[in-house]
Length: 462
Image 1 (cartoon, rainbow, N blue to C red):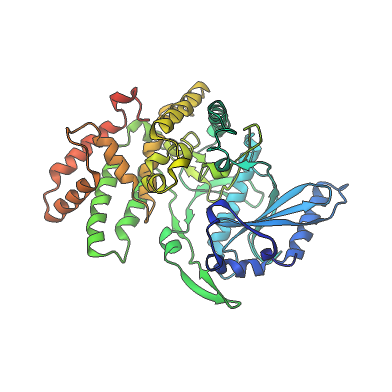
Image 2 (image 1 turned 180 degrees about the vertical axis):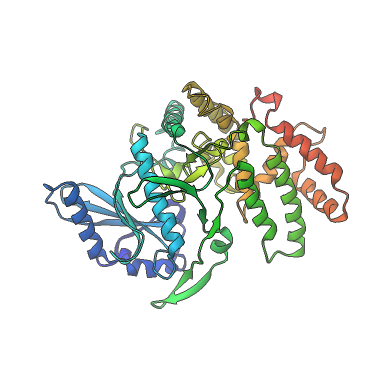
């Protein structure tokens, strides 16, 4: 094999891609020096296992949402994986991206050294393009099938196996409770790989991702990724969330109607952030690690339903405790993200009642672990889906639909007539424009204050 394209597979989220979707990443494929990659793998393994005499080759390559994964097979059957940023050519992978990648590498090593979480073992890396033409991380290959391929197969994943998996996941994630930090941001390390401090977040903003500019490299139109945005670090959960709201307020290019609605959405988000209970924010001198996307595609399981791997830790950072290691995994909060939930195949989705029951199981599993109270309180799990909805809306230019869910949840049962969230948001936008929104804003404020503990659901907002 002389090029990544010679044996390319598409990951689940890229299955519908055609040649036009793949074309922007061809310059990255072409930049990979396969011979050099295999030589690095061979040399690295020899350093770890001097007696290993096997050769190696590329088994196959996978194109995912943010990375290319080259699976390397040694002649004795051992497999490793090389992860390559799919925008990892020298012209688009500058200093900040290098810092971000290095933070991920060393954070993952820290997690592996301090817990038994099944995360990849990292053997070698280069955040520049000097060794193989692109940045890469050389790591162990974790066996298993992604959970999204199994969860909806009732013959393979009956109810008792689902419940056992959720309890097992809670136990695994709880091991992160002892890793606490003083700020929200990325972890930074010294030249020896020792943790130094939490510092700035380095983020590719969604505005850049969804409104890219293009270059032509090697005859192929490729995305010109701008330098990431630098944020923080943050000393409090609310300042972290409000930074996203400020970005929403500043977005350019909106129509007059969209600006009008955005003003209303921002007002709702500010009230939602202000409503977060004090006991979820009062410990703002202590933040924790979290998987960036603890969702079914990032969990590997074996044929018995045992978790064999937690993958895709891109952009791992410290987070507020109410959205940290103990928060619900994303596939059991899908009903709180209307765009994701309502636009998918209904046959592949669990009902809201089923998802609520799974959240209760997960919350009970965490509470049953009896973690030290200075490291964990049960509401950090029980209420994390509400916190997640606020975070998703406050950090996204394209998915503000959790605002609908927050309003529906807050006003459920509050009026005799069914609550019409679209009409409510439109009326708020109109009232803000004419300066008569104070009464409605006060109603929202009161409803949000109560939504965290509705009495009709066992005292829990599940």
